[in-house]
Every structure is written in structure tokens, then in C-alpha cells.
Length: 260
Image 1 (tube, rainbow, N blue to C red):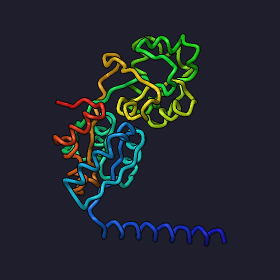
Image 2: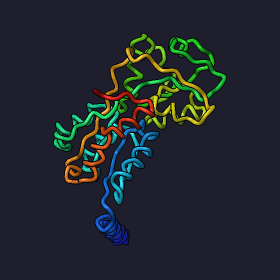
Image 3: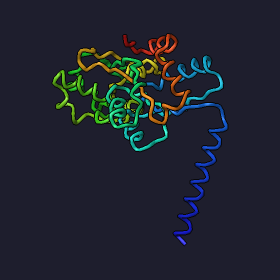
């Protein structure tokens, strides 16, 4: 009886996938996009501006950590375009045959901040206070093992000789969005985050300071078409739009620097 149920579930799953595929092929042209979490604040503006130039198209976006998306695409996830928070993961996709080499595009340069949602907590670029301030018992940051911004945060703390002494205070988020949630919910007093996310906070909710860029490697962010996406004109158009004049203006308005 159990085997019959399993077969039924498989048949229903396949039917749903077929119906989804049929719906997509009959609908307006679209692409599926995997984007690093630091792009959450900027994506709505990008999609809106792109839609004005390319009406009757859809861009479907999932947000997460760059490292996790890299693994998913390598394992065959049906994604057309990957916007990473670094250049390493897109380059590795190309190396492993899962990305289109000709499409590798540097679209923005990110910046790191120290952010708190607690309005009465004074923060500064004197990060040694993270060790000595009794009011800071937890520090949230994206997991350095698969988040470029987490690696940048680790590099900054290592640059100052603080990484080892802060181990007992660190709370690692799956991505930058979760690290921010830890600080918003009170599970951490401060968080090291992308500037784009700190700028997008509700007015009056905490404050942030920029971490000097010489303390961590430049956060060059690149996109690449997957092997599937290389055949998708909407994905190719959207990637090109990111480095158009309109796209550059939107990135700059959300705190990103622009590549040369």
C-alpha cells in the first residue's frame, strides 16, 4: 500500500511540473533569476525600470546566499541568471561548465557596514568596542563559508586582530538578510551587513557606520548566464540592463559603487 502511495505522489508531482512548464511556455517571456541577498533593496527598482523598456516580460527572482545558489545551479537547478555578491562563484560556474563564459558581467561594487537596530547603542568604526562593550553580547554576520559579505566581515575583523577574540559573540546567518533579522529581532545587538540593506532600513530604526574599505578586499559583484539561461533572451536582456545607464543609476542610488 505504501508503494502505491509513493507512486501516486510521483505521478502527481510529475503532472504538476508538466502543468507548470506548460503554463510558463504559454505565458509571456520570462527568466528565473538567483540573486544575492544584498540585492533585495535594489531589485524592485531594477525590475520596474526593466519592465518599462521590455514590457510583457517577467523576471522571477529568488534571494539567498551566493554560495548556496552556486551549489544549486551546479546540481541542475532550473535558473537562467545568477547575480552573485562576488566574482568567484560566477567564475567557478563557468569553470565547471554551468555558466556561459561570454556573459560574465561585473555589475556593482558593494560596501560593508556595522549596523544596529538599537537606537540608544552608540557604534563607531572603533570595532575594538565589539570586544569591550558590555552592551554587545552577540554580533550577527552572514556565514563566511558561503557569503561574500560574511568573508568581507571576517577579513575586516582579522585585519584588526579581533576575529579570534570575538568567536564567542558571533551569530552566523545563512545570508545577509538573515544576519540583519538577527539584529532586528534582538538575537544580536549589532550586525555586519551590506550598505544596500542598511540604507533600506525603516526611517528611525537604528543606525550604521561604514567600515573602511581598506580593511577588507573589494566586493566586486558579478552576474553570469547559466547554460540554460544562455538560450533565454529575457535573461540576456536583463543582464545587459544592469550595466546600462539606467541600471547604473539605480545601483548607485542604493549605495553601490560602479565598476569602470
